[in-house]
Image 1 (cartoon, one colour):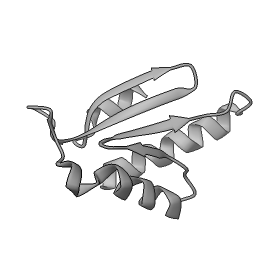
Image 2 (tube, helix red, strand yellow):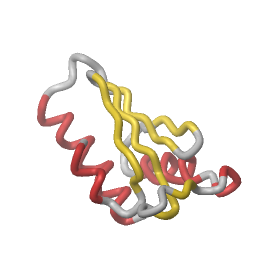
Image 3 (cartoon, helix red, strand yellow):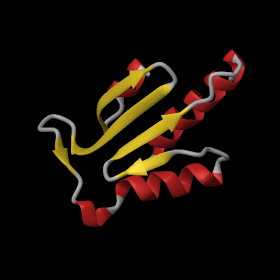
Image 4 (cartoon, one colour):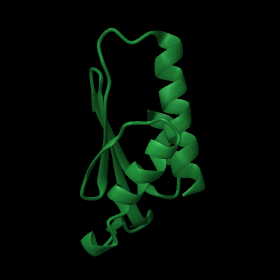
Amino acid sequence: MESFKDLPLVGDVRYIGMIGAIELVKDKKTKKPFNIKERIGLKVYQQGLKQGLILRPLGNVVYLYLPLSIRVFELQRILNKTFKLLKEF
């Protein structure tokens, strides 16, 4: 998840156990958030669904709630798809 911090859209990444949070910002340098009316989290969620991802948007933060029984290759696939989605956004 630390590699997500390199993306222009990502202001911060937090995680504990199998829960991760990716904060989306308009300006990475100033950490200026998106206006809530832009609904960036919802837009990322909707694009994720098209790629088989189930993300949880809460405002400008997108959460990943991963099952404890996930296999390593499944985890890698989810993280890779999420990274690619945010990179292209």
